[in-house]
Length: 337
Image (cartoon, rainbow, N blue to C red):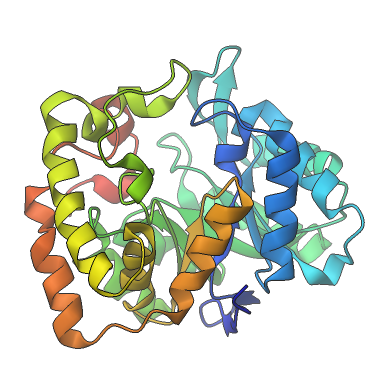
């Protein structure tokens, strides 16, 4: 398996592998997952040189953190970095309950994550979404107190816009912004990415495969399990899915020229956008992680990159990346003032 190089995450963040592993899919977001295989995938990622493991306290209502704790139990603490999101409120049956990033709530969430993960500190701690009822300065300032106390090493953000990012960075250095970025989701390029670069904030890109849409496994597929959240995602519904799969077929022809998969092509494209961008891959099987890691060996010329973008023009992507109610909760998707 490819040995993953290490880079600095932003100007103030830790040294991380060029790819990170996201844990969400291991806890039911895309239907049932095999725990034994999930544990093997976590080990495979670490063995290949990846050290960034991304999770959230609400993934599986704590299940994901406990799963990761089992995988890391025999690993030296210095061998891995834990990136944890907090603040999303989930009721039984994964019922969405909004966001709470008040300082007192943050401290409660943090204490629970430390306990479930079995560690004495979180490497990067971040609110999952902007809380409209709490100034970002209050949330970041409270996490900064946890940095001073030793419970957190670095502060990150997730899905915030350029102005919020700037306000947060004025309170405390921000290691990275976790945000969706792929061939099919390029909204960060106008304002968010330039602002992050100006401020020395790294990007940890999730959704690099557009929830699996940018992969060979999705070609010809038109249905999902009842507990797979993609059945509610606009890009995976009806005519939208048919349109998007047409773009995937065009990308597949380009991938075949390089004897690689669509997923590897999509990951290589994101990697080409800059060394300050670290793709976080939501693999839950060893072979999927191996496939993703092999994308590090894919070299694409400027002409080939342009050809890829022409094959899947972002303006032809059908459907938003989230349902309307969720899009309204994304500070990163709000129009500039």
